[in-house]
Length: 525
Image 1 (cartoon, one colour):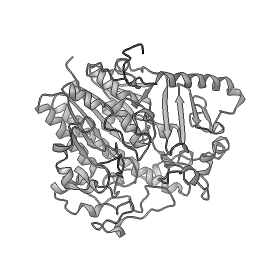
Image 2 (cartoon, rainbow, N blue to C red; image 1 turned 90 degrees about the vertical axis):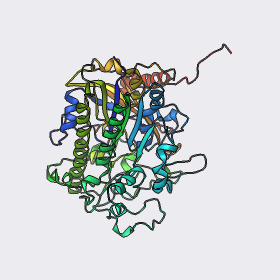
Image 3 (cartoon, rainbow, N blue to C red; image 1 turned 90 degrees about the horizontal axis):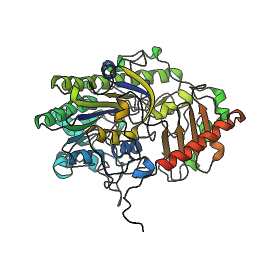
């Protein structure tokens, strides 16, 4: 087989059940089509339930604790080898379209970021970026957008595209800057206020007035197709990461997607009051409007998730969930155009297509909204489809465990490469051909605020064990077979003592096995 094309399609913060093949309440005909001609892995896990750490793991094959971008607001060092770099050296055309988030929204000496202000809004910089700054993390073509929904972080290549398509007043469709610095280009009074209690992402009007043809979802799909056509014209195999921004909050989307789902049909998750009795202190605090989370925020930069999650009415959750589903369906529509282009160019049989998300999402489950340092299935489990007709099985559903840290070595294996670089992820390509997995567990990390919030989870076929740094009393153990909703923490249950001991042994062995050896040993001393 000649070197295949590789197309990575990702969403951002998508719950693993929001696929039509798994959930009759949502319409995703194009992802369903992809699943019908591939393998739908229903137990895939992210290495960290936040954006930057997992996205860096996707392109490095390393866990966040090793590649350097260990939490939000950090930077993936540009010296770390990436899958794009290795595929470029093998002759691939490489491109990243959409969201990167390898670098923080602030830039400081020693941690310079092109994804930070004021560079983010310097359109002249982005107009010449591909001539002066690529390859960037191994991608020789980059087209970026940083904002979600109507956030004020709009700029980069997306803003250039908006102006090229006649929307010169694009700033009026986005909020006031959110970094505490005034922005004279935009009227802050136009920013829609939060509603229905605390929590991020809620708007009084979730029907975004930005026309569909100017939405970044449309842009991502259009520019992905352009990248495919460019590589095809050059007769080069391609590695393209088509990186969608939704359904990450804020919950807002244009019509017709905003009205596609009725709120009254939505069934958001909820808190079982009894589960709090067996959970760590921070979990209980999320339901207390007067809780003081300051001791979990030692760096002063905020802590995703450790805050009050209550105050949302069921109706408010239903409205947000309806918009969230609409955001997924809009993205699915755009992905369908990309799949159609592969068919049109006769590339479908020559292209390994993988669809997944960087992490999951809470919408009421366990009393939580959005994301945070909570390793429930809602937050760490992600949708995952792998398709390559004639090579991988078609129409198969598999519950074998997958991890996003495996994507880099798997893509290289699919390209016929045997890299010398030491990965922590596993090569899954041979296992995918049988609809199985090369691993029997997944590891999920969270290290958000230095030593104040650090936890790690082992997930096996049946159990989940979570440990917290220096806080053994916070440990969690869930029996996913007996308790799939993760309501009963069994860590301190005497009936699970033997299980707990076995899981700790497996945890230690997994930590030993994933320790990387970055350089070869060439001498006895």
